[in-house]
Length: 366
Ligand SMILES: CSC[C@H]1O[C@H](OP(=O)(O)O)[C@H](O)[C@@H]1O
Image 1 (cartoon, rainbow, N blue to C red):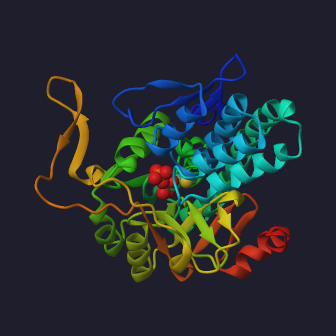
Image 2 (image 1 turned 135 degrees about the horizontal axis):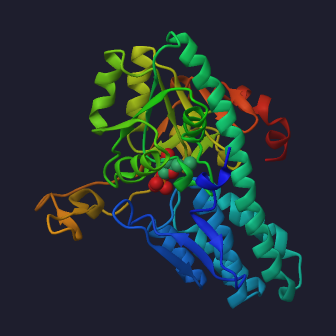
């Protein structure tokens, strides 16, 4: 299958070998705008303000951000300061720390004059590795979708609910939760996707729906509160979502509202899967519900909505006036509510034992 439709459209290195190109996801689906990151501050702002978002993608952009920073100051002090600035942009997705740790380890022992090239080389490897990993996740997810298709009679589309955006826009390519869906559609296995709009930033309505439209995958956007009703009435055959951090015990941190979908799925016997690449596993966190930091974002993301006005202009409109608003950006689903974790190495139970079975060397090394 042609990878190009699902890869290298979110972040790339410009021909000058230093400038980092990104697709500005805050403008989608209304406009397609590319942005050039020329400084480490550009990279910081891009991650913090969610021009790029999605755990694997912010890891890749964080890696390039460190390379941009080393081009400005390759000293030990400069490296440490840049690491801290980039790490502080978003606290929940573990891929950012993973990527910054990886690049720092790669360059720390080098002479400052050798650090920039080494950092860019490693950032490129991280980006390319993400595409390969997600393709493998897609194959493993495709197998589950194919099995589900047979289980529901094999004569109708598999109805899959997803939350937020874990498509190629959340990664360097293919996506995680959507990768298997793209493959199923391309291979003629009929699927239909229920797309949670995913307030307050509406990554589902703005980004997942855009990806599925582009790929021609049948889908229906729904209010976040509709999923439980659809599950109660047999309209959902399985759920597949992404994640920003999986704890060593299998607890899953993902966009706010995921926990509620997992509860509804558990109550209705709907298989609930979470797709993730190995950098999303945080072996240092023993209990996800207790220990994973939850990002609190600006209340304006709740009180304002971006849309297209009748005259065609795109604007932010205030929909809540005079009231306080709270905006926790993630929640944590206990592993007991998760049917399986879909990784590049296969599918496992959402538990410490399940994860160690797939990654024996990682558990030992962490
Ligand atoms: C494949 S990671 C996707 C994951 O990231 C999203 O968070 P955000 O858009 O705030 O970066 C969301 O939790 C997705 O499930």
